[in-house]
Length: 436
Image (tube, rainbow, N blue to C red):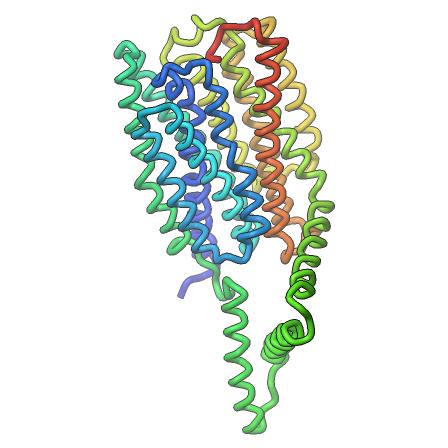
């Protein structure tokens, strides 16, 4: 018989795999954005690739939060795997830039949808498992940037021929297809919840069974227990409410009765998590401002000198720090995330101003990117750790609260792309060095 420790280990591995595979294609696309643009002679549109990778995110997260929340998790995980497969296969075989961008949209949509699904599903389990999910997402960045470094070095050693780069990118994307099967296996077989029904439908079914059993016992003179009586009352109240709504109200009134509590619950959750969500949004905004700015902080000739090249090495340092930091919640929980966010804002200003004046030496940039990754990962994991762990956020609201918080991540990324596009076409327009 499985013990609690067995379930804990299995679930830790399962959520780690979900985090890893959900974000692996997303991070590979971000790291390979330069090569994708070069394959189609669109070097000036690298920013468009970053934008395409998050363009559908807000739609997918809103759809999951307010439309698909009652759809069984199994169906949502399956659909997300299909979206992921379409994205990576499309990128592998894209012959035109427009088709490649469309595939990038699918990859980004899969990452956003998968994040919301997994965080909502995680709310049903031990709150400490958020560390497993966060570690998986951090490791995805490390693996993705590592693949980019390996293929980039191979291209440099072979002379960086365009056909070779295209072939290497193709195999990099195709190598992620088998991981989709592991993604489904993690949900279906690895993750288990000991002794508790997973869905409301299962709970109602068990209540119905208890009702029948107790009716038999009452006839035989037995007194029902408190637990089974509660189950019957839940089932009876649910049935009576449903019957009353159907017979005594019109369709429109019924719809209002259903939507009003949802809207009220959404605003209550938003009010409770607003401070955490704003910090998450602002820190994510700063992270992406820094990551994209790192492509223009030095002259173009300084980027392709070594293996790994400068941009790839900075991304690898960032992702390694993210992985380390996102795995730290159980060891070093941090509640004062506002301090971390403030430091990240200062870092962002330093990097953006450096695009203009280039005062940061090359030797400092990778180490500085480690600091950025550590701060970003710490804010991410501690926000969701508090949402899952703090009694301030009731268990029945955690699914919705985590979904709303995840939407703020997409808002931060979107604002960073808009801000940098405006800067690159105004005060920083004269800068022609770097990747953009």
